[in-house]
Length: 84
Image 1 (cartoon, rainbow, N blue to C red):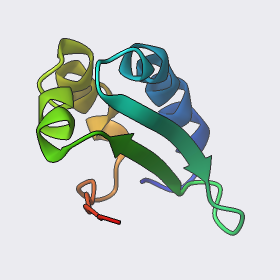
Image 2: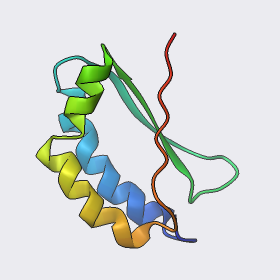
Image 3: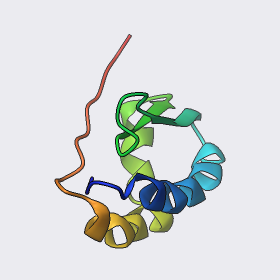
Image 4: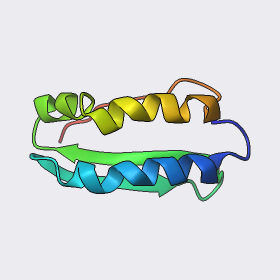
């Protein structure tokens, strides 16, 4: 994200946490801020399966998020998937 814009981004992102946690098949959706860089944020998202995660990105409040945060980002959001 652009330097010094972490708090601005966090305010926008916090609005999607509650509706996301209410989605079926969501287990956890937690926002973290780096201890070393206040402008670095990370979401820890746990879904029951990959399809549930993919459906999440089709929700209107997530699709609208892209246009709301675009001007705050220095580079494209990086998504990584992990399995137990």
